[in-house]
Image 1 (cartoon, rainbow, N blue to C red):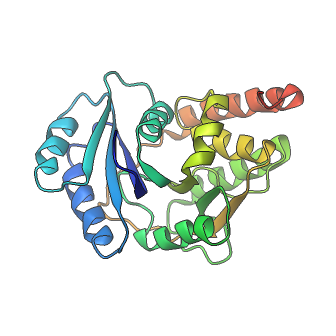
Image 2: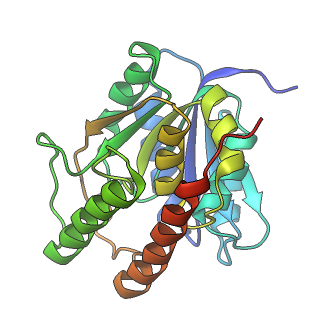
Length: 245
């Protein structure tokens, strides 16, 4: 049986051989100054490049590093489900592999769970004190998506897709069985269904930074279509939604 730790930090990865080594180094550099037990889990979503090989080479240097594999590409949501179910932390945090959100958000998220007793703490690019610089078109899409989600799904959160979230482990493992999304809409479904189920969700302002200067993996038109269909699914599901026994 694996030893319980305070924090599990999950980094979902798909074809990230170019950046994953640097990401691991940066995350460990940050967490070595935190006086709590932790593990770093790379949730490899069936990468076709050398992502897994690079991670395995890093495991030799970092005893807290683990690799959890989806053997085929199943989507970020499935990669996160797999990693969360295999994690040992009392609090589970996920961070996007490009480290687009400043890591200084971490203590604020876990403080919300440990001190304010919330179940989920999420970073937000749409709060008054958020610091954000990215293309206007993406910003417009993000705000429009947020508004639609609040209207259609009865949620109070402003930003659903920020790639930095923390979960109380005992809560998220009870929420996951309700989640049907396998890909990018996983975040939205987790948040709104957590609220439908009565869990506490707190939003905190995030600072967006650009570590690698690489192009985003977001495909705007394709993702708008897919996430729009997911919002409609959740809208109709909300009508008959009932907690499981």
